[in-house]
Length: 170
Image (tube, rainbow, N blue to C red; front, side):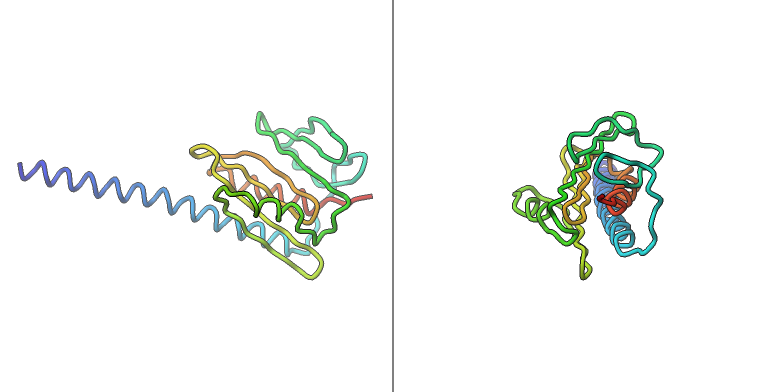
């Protein structure tokens, strides 16, 4: 009987440790991703604009395939994962229009902002299904959204912020 209790206590402890490890992994990933967005947003380095739409030029990673344009909005795919770029040319780089819309939602969001004198950036992550997250990255009137898994979050967000930051409206 004693061994059963000891075994049960050991298994409970292992379960708690395992679960707390998973939670800190999500927290760690979100904090690392915050740093990526902030560093890229504040960086003076420019990436090469290698993609042209009717209205602007921008950086596009080789891994993304252009699918279609709907006005100033573009849809890209990496495999079956869509990336949707929204461009509101009437909004300035310091606009909080997209951000304010997110703030009013009642869902639980991981939402961070970064600001300079002339630009405003935000980054949000919302868990939609277990291990699947909806991500938005925006600067002013430009935002990009996708759905991704936790293990791809950092890489996806890094490319998204580069794309959004690179947009050169004509």
